[in-house]
Image 1: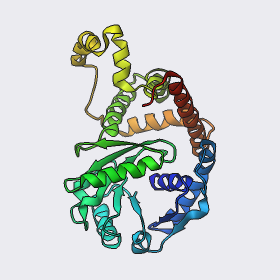
Image 2: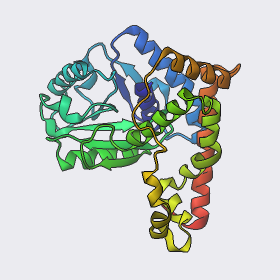
Image 3: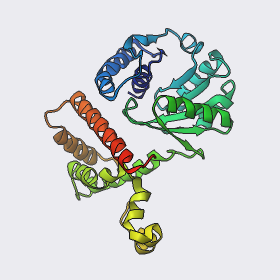
Image 4: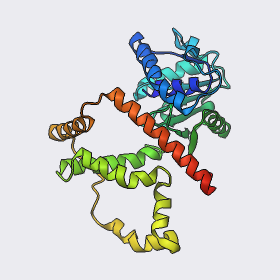
Length: 303
């Protein structure tokens, strides 16, 4: 899913893409996902020369990367698998080509250590759907050079993305650290019978989620402090952080909890297929991003 998102974004920017898939089934799945993403990309607007025909598959890793100008790996989150693949990539790629991994759960130093020229290796962690969501977290390992970080940021920016340099090599990086905390709390609320999955989603999409899409957490709370801003907010609401509201330890994933979550989300989906909901999600994302961009322009806000 992540790999196909990268492919779709690159194709939509008028680039040639050479991909390698471990199986024919994986290749077919990737092609199908690119086709599914194309209508959303057409609505968003594509670069001149954009075409699905610019996607080609290589039979080997060497054929895939030896002439590449930039490499993005998106295989499953298995440390040994990533180590082996990146050693092969490093052996075949030109020494000055940036090698990036889409990993969300592994640290770059853990699997780049034995790669040729490890100073050019980074993590470029995107968010689904990659072909629409602009955020990509750029993380360097212990051996990564500053020039590699800067080069990766320039490449992602050219793809219409919003690169976020994660300055320290920490598990979960930035966004997933925040999302995991919310996910744990949501599971506890279901497990404790406080709310259904649909009610929890409503609490986000009709409340904080609307603000987060254009203002984020800190700026939202700054406004909540009134004219005195964040300092007043911290003084008034800071002590509440000590209240025992949260359960930051993950709940045990019992069959009962899993069944409750599955039943709740199945009810939320109703008669709609996953593909139909993906198209709905994409159309909503495009509408939200366009509306935010227009409103920012009206108010003279650039970031």
